[in-house]
Image (cartoon, rainbow, N blue to C red; front, side):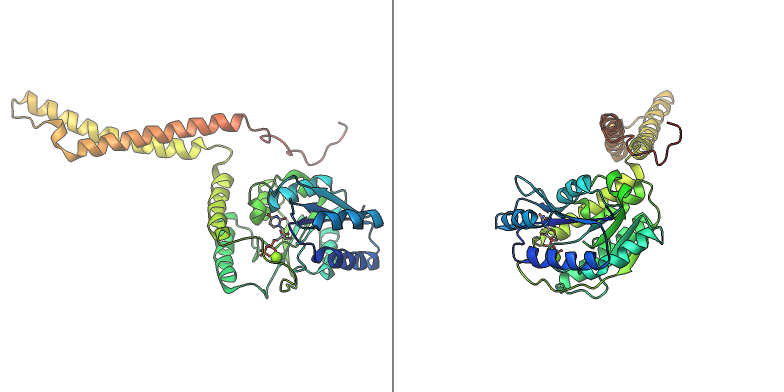
Length: 317
Ligand code: UDP
Ligand code: MG
């Protein structure tokens, strides 16, 4: 199989027939052996009926269906697991991404040796708020990850097959797949300007909460990429630092008290000084941070994906 096209679908009944016809046309012209994998993310319209009817007519159309709406990331992850093509393409099902981009994306993976090529919707047909916040996220994501992409969350992307098998996209992390890929050791990440179109049918599946969630996920990613493997390096350092500060403060108060008493001066109560309370608080916070670090390390030990996907090639094994 040359190309697998993975398409998450959530209530997109009007677009599916048009989209699959268009993809068929492009892929047939390019002479690919290809498959289209529709992942129905718990649609409540007739999306699944349409997918199953189409798949009965054309054997390159495959479908998976979730029991309920799990989200785009889960849909992509499940589609990835089924993808057999050397190159895997993802695209949205709402006709906002153009299948005409597929051949060039495939060429970049095959011939230019990219692990991942992300689309860049340079000219976007989206509401102003979305374009604006998207700029901020992309800037921040670039800064944290060091990946020079303009449009991390473009639905249209191309991957080498082993990339999609090595990353676990969950929650709403589909926004930051390039960062996950880089984390997994795939460093050759490219970009291609792609045509973006206005939504033809249906409505967007995300509300305003996407902005808050996107921002929180970005923080998570920033944290995980830096300290995910060894959280103690962060929490332990902070905790120790705070504990030492508190300890020195308390120590100072204690020593002062002893000196005063020794010289038979009237010693103020340790609890009279505001530093006593500050010292207490700082030591408590330090201890909490430290324990958090230990707990995080324990959680890490139980993670099933801890040492997966490390190996790239093997000989004589
Ligand atoms: N989608 C999905 N599950 C969801 C939400 C969206 O599979 O819970 C799909 C949706 O059908 C579309 C793609 O993800 O193919 C992008 O969604 P949408 O077009 O609503 O997002 P936008 O273009 O507004 O960012
Ligand atoms: Mg869309």
